Length: 245
Image 1 (tube, one colour):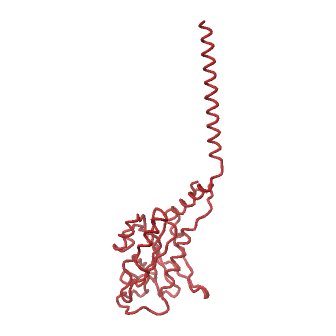
Image 2 (tube, one colour):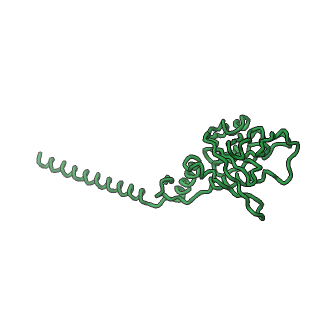
């Protein structure tokens, strides 16, 4: 009788062992298939969006702000703005006027990257700021609440992006008092701001009326180029370290 029971328990143990082995094999097969299958379209979209959102800290500053950017009328010869320098500080509060910071803080500003460009004739200086948000929706809400593109005649541009001067360059005299114009653009989770003035550093309050010929026309073109590059989504390549698929 005891021998019969022992054999019965042995059979039960063998059946259970085979069941566990089969379950483990199925689970391992499923895991292997999951790890080696092609990503779905939704996963590719999420990976592309995440890569765009990381660019502000994953890319070198020189890639965010190229050394030269073209500008000019669509039917005319292109001219080039040259980068005078890049601001190492990326704090939101340090990058914009306090009144503007109120709007940016409300929508979750994460950083403000700044660089300054000088036009080809070295007469106009433009500081460009990339304001970083968590996602495109927060960036869009902040963008819609920003003040108009430019300050009133003779009143300068305020609140606006803070000017950034670099000694030894044509931007050396450009400070907040010299800001005469401001623009804003948006791409993905980024809002791109500009503030411009003259390289001689003359204060905006000394300008009684705006100069003819749109002297600050290069600024929105520079901003658009930077916004476009930062927000242009690439096809995911899961074999490269910059992607998280």
